[in-house]
Image 1 (cartoon, rainbow, N blue to C red):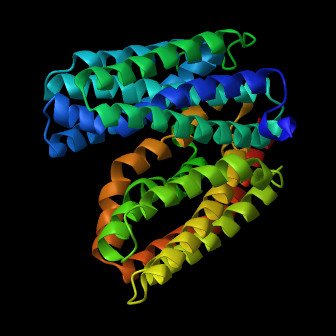
Image 2: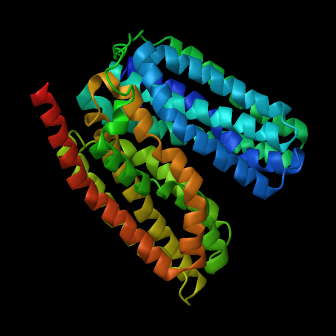
Image 3: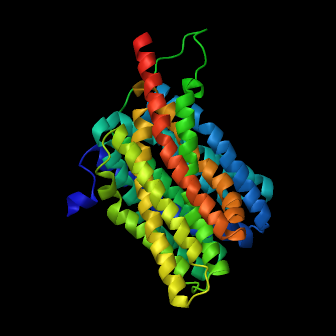
Length: 409
């Protein structure tokens, strides 16, 4: 049983330990930060939203150059520095008293977080055999969800007291967690630079920006990542405003999602070992997401309360199954299509989908499903299915382009 819950001993387990430490702090931070900036700092909700949108936009742009830095300076060194920088940026929130300092601190936080994600992916690629990367990432995702759940419970205690000191304790905890993460990463084996310094006149430094097939794959994955604000924002709003289900079901759906990922993400990823299996898994995930969206739409029909509850639970189960399939396939695709000596910048580019989904998803999904209703749900489901199916041709195009480059070289 422990072997199912823990990744293999060695670097993979150390990466999981760093992930767990991060998630504990972030879980508490995520459930308290908006209320802290609103109730304690006194920022209007619209300004909080604007500030976070600007911050994640900056973070998305920073992913490629920070990933390139990991290639040039070594991913472990850069990951350690960015983990420490994230801790410092979280600590700076303790001193925020107005909108401009909030935006500056949030930009530093989003930039360091995005760069840290790219550097850790490059570090994983360097320390874990290619055939095992998706399996290890599945363990890390399970660890992430477990840590977020425990951290959210800690944040709930702070929300219960609702005092300035309680909120500040959560922020201090998250900052300390990132500093501890840096120490854990520092214990991993040193990894040297994978990319040689660019010679003058040899073209753009960021080759990923010229890789059109990889850009298309990243765009399609970004569309699939709209599932992130779907579970955190659109589904809760839909449940409480458009269905007759009780409000506590919002929490039940979140528990269902995080619990399923903790228990079944590793098993779901077990069948993904190469690009063909990854493409098939993502396509199946798109079909499940379409079915999930259709059932979510049905939850608003005029029916007994228990009918709405049953529909939402079924839709939530289909949604998390599709999410796990899409994640498993996307991890394999993102790694396998990236050149071995440029994993940092390629993972930074591929990872841009996360801040972009966080930035654009809330506005898009609330307008699409919460305001429009059933047609919006069906359109969203078709989008998930279409993006999942389109990844197959996009991946084959990228493979052909890579083969052509190798033959020319």
